[in-house]
Amino acid sequence: MPDQFKQHIAKFVPITEAEFTGICTYFNQELLQKKEQVLSEGQTCKKKYFVLSGCMRMFFINEKGAEQTTQFAIEQWWLADLFSFIRQQPSSFAIQALEKTEVLSITATAYAQLLNDFPFMETYFRQVYQITAAAAQMRVKFLYGYSKEELYLQFSSNFPEFVQRVPQYLLANYLGCTPEYISEIRAKRRS
Image 1: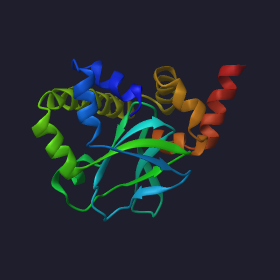
Image 2 (image 1 turned 90 degrees about the vertical axis):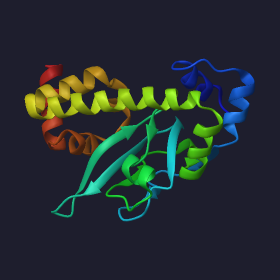
Image 3 (image 1 turned 30 degrees about the vertical axis):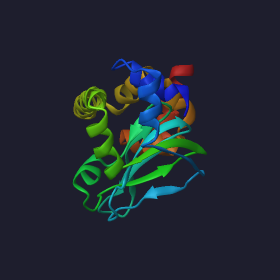
């Protein structure tokens, strides 16, 4: 099991080598192909994904029939429709690999057993969820309080790795603007 997962856990809670070895038994390592969809709207989210390498996104189909990206995940980020995963009910979202992506996945059953067998992992996941919730709050603030240009500049400043890796049309979709508008902002910044 990759060291980067152990390092990620250790950022939040102390962990021994023996504990990490035990924790790894609850996960499967998967290789996803570019554009592979691991969850579709209406399916139950059966797995949470920890990205080892690559990039994924979560999205839904809006009332006009267009995809609306709500979240990205790159190395050392988690991705799942948490509501569907926790309650084991149909998802309102889809999840797709944007590039060849290697993940660790854990099923809802294995997740519940992991938390039972390794109680400190509840602390780990609570802290991860707190960061995720805080980031979602800031995103809402930025969406409502910033112009599209300010939103793009803030996002590109805070997450330059996404701007380099995510196709411009998906980045524009996530930020609520057009790819052409992002091109204009980039051109203005270069001049």
